[in-house]
Image (tube, rainbow, N blue to C red; front, side, top):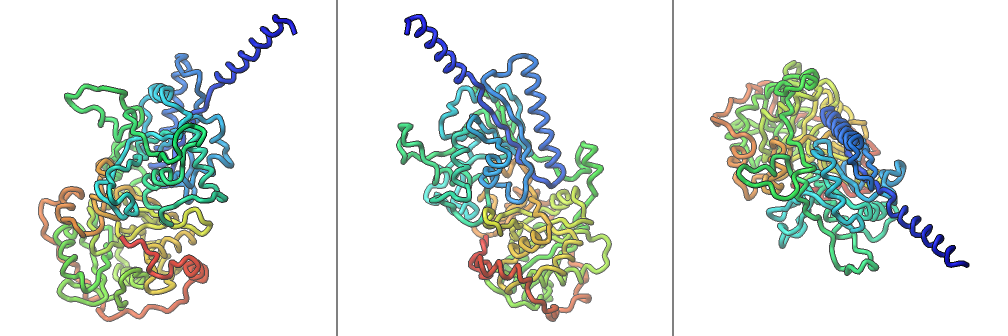
Length: 547
């Protein structure tokens, strides 16, 4: 072969290599979109339109980076997609959106905002897409908490996890590795629990415990992968605009949008006003679950805090106490579970409500639940009380299993439209008196086709169990547990407090409801529910995550 021919072939080879290297990589922006409430769904498509508009503007100005191809995908939440780990197989499977060319994945929620697509892509160009890494606004626990399964209990403040609503950026190599690990045939993966509580912390912990560097990369396999804090991802847009402080480093490219008051009548948005119905505390029936040993300890706290705004409140107990008064359910108290008691409460509540046209909703709460009645009312204003509506703080149980399900945890409060309460009383039963009430309720409603719609601001634990950035993003609606905390301070600090704490007298309902046990109609548990509970062990109280 002549030297000239060798030169030509060499140039061709070099050109092919260069063209391969210059082939644009893909940036996939995914918007995880819940089907309800409608406002959240609208925000998903508004975010998609905003990103696409910025993309077109950059292309027209010929300043869009030529080494990237942008894909925007609104991922409709179907059953258990609300956790990123559960959504991954679908991104890589049927849609094929996550492929070998995907260099970066920008994971957003409905309330994430992309303030500068150009700036965001410029940040990505400065980072190594070949690393197993993910970037976001880092949150930390102030103390070990049960909602995070008490992980890193010796030093919880050192473990970072991402604020999902602010957006998270993943390298393609990391997300592809995760997709392989969560596939149905993956082996040797570690899950902290069957329960899905906080998708953000559980994601960070899953990566930390299961993803190890490639042994050929030169990085020791013992190195653990944790979230990298990114200064261009902020809790809110204004969080980087502190008065009197020079703006150093990259400004916010991704951030969370603080939630507006959900009451449509308080909103300037006309399309929200059209969908909302003015709701006050007088439209809500508060069924408070208690027992004799907590009458003096807990009910007095409720009466000094949120009771003044809850004129339709009833205390349901294992005994009748005319001094409060409480209504006896006729069900003996048990340590955990309370399924039979909850079903009795719902039946008694319907009887008590009767034909009162003003009552639209029932809120089932524990006797150590703190809440803001005005914020509950605002939350309910944009939901249709004539439909089957099931609201609360959503948890998941065995979501990756075919028989997994979502449910609303009881301590945060469970909101039910009256038509749904009637459906529950007609169709749902308890496999045992001590079965976990909130989980049985969620499983039954899922079987009946009623979605567990998450309500922002409702909390199963205490304020100190959550990162402050999250509490500031959404005005809290409820908290749970009086243990190791000052509930009256919590009420003033986080739930709006009150200018006066004089309690509204209880309605004269004792004449209409006898203190004697109401004989409930005996029905056999639904075979499907009973069989599932026996197989999974949920029939015993030991499976309850009692916070």
